[in-house]
Length: 411
Image 1 (cartoon, rainbow, N blue to C red):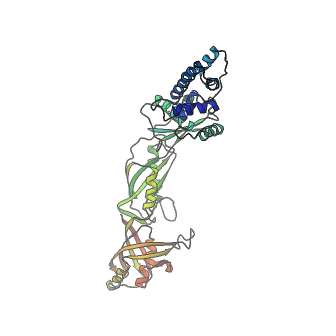
Image 2: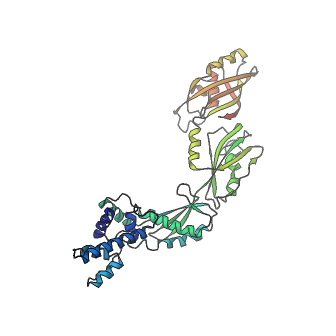
Image 3: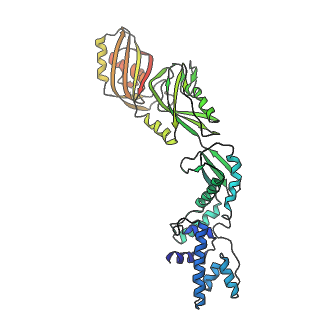
């Protein structure tokens, strides 16, 4: 009876349609629609008030308030000589009546996309939301369903009646149906397709995204065919870290996610790519959280590099043994001179876990560096004019040039 008493309080103050009244008391009668719940509440109130009236109680004010939004009560009052005019709902003003009709405007747009899941989003007139908020706050209602949620849900259910094999997914839908109840306009937003995978870079003339210098192609260009699988307008490649264009990415490869924007289909099989420059092994469909994880993971990855290094002066195996003191060292680096236009004084601190070497000739040695992701390895070797400390050049007291650099593993 407590809920019915609260419902009567609300009706005394505001005329509400069946759906809006039922929404305010969503905790009552699970498994029924808001309009059905509202009808039930009004019917019980009607029977209770009519019974009280016949017993001589003064309930005409309550019956009149209910009659404004309840036809059986209007009929009863008319039978005893009291005429009451029907009033529109204070909250929605009739907006909820037949709201499912908006699905008709969306169906032709959805027919152009091959998708699996969808969500519904609507723009509700500001004054409707304000009136709902007013009623909820005044009567301290905490268990109701918002009008926006009801409209989205009802339009979604109507769409499901016509879309065989589709499902509603509020977290990661393929497409989002947008309906503006102010203008009546409908649109469909196509969310990106995200495909995970790993790549190996076999050429020293391939960059990740931009062409410059003697770069002949980019990883992004190589993976353009992924976009074509899904009919997308453009694509972006998200990578866990970055190697220089003249460094090869070997071993088991580096993780990436290919984002295809504005796809026209969400089903498709991406074939692997194998040529003289790049190997790409596609994985499964993924999500935006995985992209964020890749970006963060790049800061803590442990990476193994191989470098072929040229020394200005001759070196001996005994001198190279001095490099053992770099294992376990913390390296501090200012932004390298080659990219310092971005943030010239920014400081980066990274760990070098292990260093190994092999003398190839008096002026050439092979260096293996196992380090924390984000270390500028070339600068760690040649010192970058003192901007990296400690460095291999500093330990060996000679000018060094990196001839080749390879990423052998990303752990």
